[in-house]
Length: 374
Image (cartoon, rainbow, N blue to C red; front, side, top):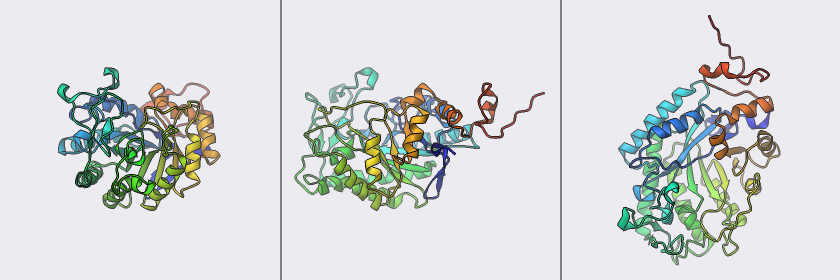
């Protein structure tokens, strides 16, 4: 069997294969609530055959949204909207549903932004935006309104909101959770000296900069059911030669996450520094995942310009990562998993309504599925 299509056990959850639908912000929610767009967008991905589907970055409080159109999970209305969405998604491919996973986080100083197609720039408070909150009063971009530097009391209150969000995610029915510590959002902002210039116990040394993200992880893990897995997404490097947040520090952070009960590390990069210089290319972040995998004894997820089945298979088969996450590749080809199965000689679960779709020459990628006609 192709390694890419082998099952993976995470606590008591068995993921059917190593292919993951990465979280993709859609900026299409209303007051934090998912909309018909999300049903259509995630519905096709729930039928894709991927082993895990991660719902987009979801804010633990309204002020933690990147844009006014971002999804939240912080009150009964947003909880019900996600629970109803899960009911629909699970009904679409009941014989082979993906592990439904929610990524939770907080935008920090990158909050109060316009949607990408409306410039993506900061929304001034006078124009309906809100004052962002962050580790330090340092704006993300020159000319922006600096965020409010959070006090220790405010940090404790926000940690409680992460905990409440995790409880709501469990009630809504999610199988797994991912804590967003990447891409320049709040928890990454604590980790990076680019955005964290505090002089208290949460700033300065690596130990201090890790303190708050680890505090949140420990608190969330304590309330998230013991039988359900919890992952952490990190940015392995800031791609900024002036920043110490690099692969070495990320490795230490990943070790601490594993020790606190994290079940996988999802390895991305960048997002916190406007000085970042990223070298793009096929699988450009896979080396980061491989390096983190040498530091921890839990599964590691690779992301970033992984587009071909043979490429994904080699990453898993060579031991560079345990799971492969795709985003844009799924938007371009929602049937990516089916095509990978055909190329690699594997099988995948699909809705019975689609069993008749395979063209001549494609093997039994749906197993022994049979369709009768009269």
